[in-house]
Amino acid sequence: MGKETSASAGIVLSGLAKSYGPVKAVRGIDLTITPGETVALLGPNGAGKSTTIDMILGLAQPNAGRVTVFGMPPATAVASGRIGGMLQTGSLVEYLTVRELVEMVASMYPHPLDVHQVLEATGTSAFAGQRTTGLSGGQTQRVRFALALVANPDLLVLDEPTAALDVEARRDFWSSMRSVAQRGKTVLFATHYLEEADAYADRIVLMARGRVIADGPSTEIKAKVGGRTIRATLPGVDGSALEALPGVTAVDRRGEAVVLSCGDSDAALRALLATYPVARDIEVRGAGLEEAFIQLVGDDEEMEEVEGS
Amino acid sequence: MTAGNVAVATGDTKMNNATYVRYEILRTFRNRRFLIFSLGFPVVLLLTIGGANQHKLIGSIPFPLYYMTGMAGFGTMMAIISSGARISSERQVGWTRQLRITPLRTRVYFEAKVLCGYLMALLTLVVMYAVGSALGVRLDARQWLVMTLLILVALVPFAVLGILAGHLLKPDSMGPAIGGVVTLFALLGGSWGPLSTGKTYVDIVRLLPSYWLAQASRVAFGGSEWPPVEAWIVIAVWTGVLVRLAVRVYRRDTARV
Figure 1: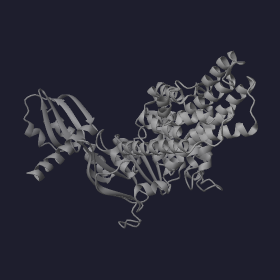
Figure 2: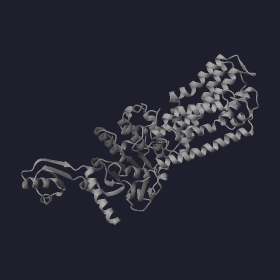
Figure 3: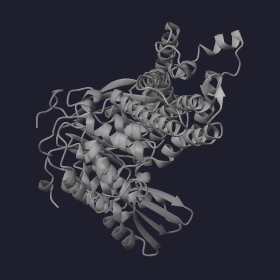
Figure 4: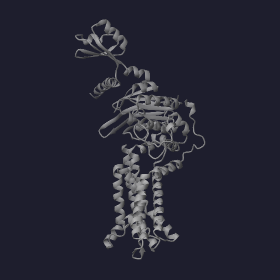
């Protein structure tokens, strides 16, 4: 895959920033996505994912920096039909059947996919003859995906496509997504589920508070934010002694209980039980994404203070 | 299902707006509520009031003819404003945002709305003329035609007004707002007969596009076919100002979302 020249690079964001009034939604993002990559924008609510996506789609204008998509400004890329998008919110227009709606949107693009087959692939053919009003949330979401897909775009952008779905519908969504969308297309999707990002993206871009705080192969990011914690009731043991245990990265004492943040929870647990057999009420949990973010963002803020001083 | 199943559509790979426009028209005419309210009200008024006064004259003009032309102005104004105003609900559900990330040009979106409004207005005219004929209205072909064309021209500023309303108002407030504005325009413009014949009053209402919409049918009363220059100026100025406002509101709207 050709690299770094603006024409061959898929999406290039440089120094991208956007404020809404006093709210700095995106505060300087540099990112290059090569054609064919599947990239997840992972971050909690308010991280700036949607704003970033809106700028890539040309829906929002940056206050600073620029975006190019296949070497073009977003509006040009959209007008030439090279981008297909599924926005986070939005329902379908009324008084059409699902099939008619997909046909209507297909007609706007220069090289649309076959409508019938898109309906099949997105699991919408069963209700393709129904009016768009009166569909369930999951069905609506599938139709919205069909609208993005039928465009047959070079870049597919999905902003939290599964946010409104239950677990099963989410799995269905991704299986149809995988079967259809990964044919040399560039895919960018936003999510706040680490598992989704890990399972479906080659690369994860971690965002918090309008910045990219980590960017790398999914496995690497997962290791970074996917650590575990061990919680145990263990009175009278010094925190620094616990911190010295193998696999433990941080210790937090909460009354009689201690919470150990672990890089390697297996090693830490073995060592904990061997050293302190009195430890009881032991729980091992995946550290929530939120916790990982707080930690990463915390580091980020400290740096900011250093920069500022 | 595998990726290989999905093929690029063969044949028609050229972008065309015909499909989009066709479905927009279909959507308009499938919207029964819209059809009933837009058409039903003037039809009922014409049938009841026109029917009750079927053999009366206003001056030398048969009452049904007089009332038919008034209702034609009112009904078409309602139809064409409502069409643009539907943008409001499409904005609310996020559909216009979805369209902005497709290659569909904004222009085509607005043109389709105006076209649908005109089709609704034409349908309204046909129904009004049919009801009027049933009540005994008789005109020659040229009078029907000239009246129709002039009404369509006088509707231009109202088509723009609808698009403007579609960007300014929420769907909830749209019904009363349109009802109020259309009724006011129709009343002042003289769709139900002049409110006053005082010189100052007439001088003022002559500045309204609805006055010339009502005047569009004077050929049916034996008046001249060609409207005065003043009519064209009023229509053009209203259209120009409303277009400017609509463009400004549209830009503000798209910059924010």
